[in-house]
Image (cartoon, rainbow, N blue to C red):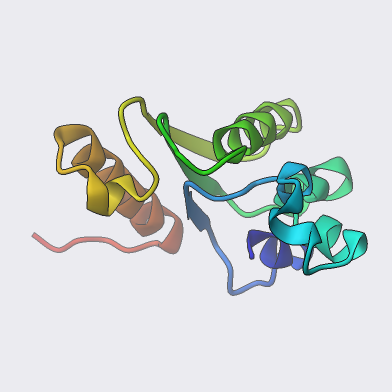
Length: 133
């Protein structure tokens, strides 16, 4: 669903956070094509927006699970990141080498907590939230 706000970049979207998200659903094989047309699959594939609309993409935080069990998930994230960096997208990336899919609720470890704290700090910074001490 990131592709919708990547494409239009509405003013109310100041940042995006994606934890273990399909960044290119076109390469996911039968997972989507059995129920959706090829054009629909392309239109909901975030990597597609990098070709001509990279400058419209709000700052993006991507968290990746190094041991994601969902077929092609990590590959889609890796390819998106390479392409996003080549297009100078404002991107913050966090990798959990030992993390499984849904590591934020499945891996009770320091790296999971660190990534969650980083995502929260990213959102606060991009939303202009200042903490009062």
